[in-house]
Image (cartoon, rainbow, N blue to C red; front, side):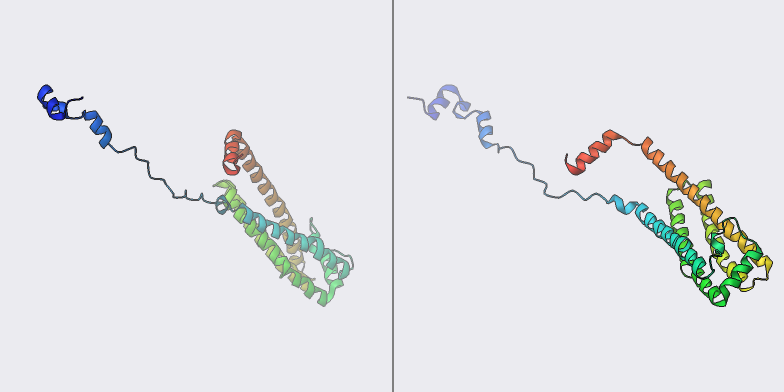
Length: 235
């Protein structure tokens, strides 16, 4: 039979009847505590589409290009065929025309034709270069380098719009007064200049586009792109 606690104290001392401290601590210490579970969802990543206006700029420029196509490829050739008896219209004379050529054009279309011709200038003929100029200006502000490239591009864009609107106004005045050779010559210069500015803007746009593509190819990291694809699509 084992000794009682009193007998153990009498035989071995005061601490003999106590349980070992490690056993008491083991019984008293609580079990491992679990960390609280985080139930909050991570904040959504900002949408990249909202920071990239490229789609909007592309839409504006496409609309402007379609309007330019509509005026110069559909409306004006049809006017030349139906109203001017195939004589041609000033807008499509890329290298210019003489005062005699414009006087003959005014004689063929007459007063009614001149009013119809002028209405083209102040409807679709006004909207097309305006939309194109807005699209080009936005493109240059966003993608052209600061300094000479951006400033020169914006200057050419502004000239393109001003020359187009000025050419519409001057050619209407020249058609209304075919004997005024100065107006006819001035309208010829403006009509030719607007084609030159259009070509310059197309070269500027193409150059900026190539530079941006070259920069993206140089900075492209296939490993990071693959990891990003796996993060998005889980594959």
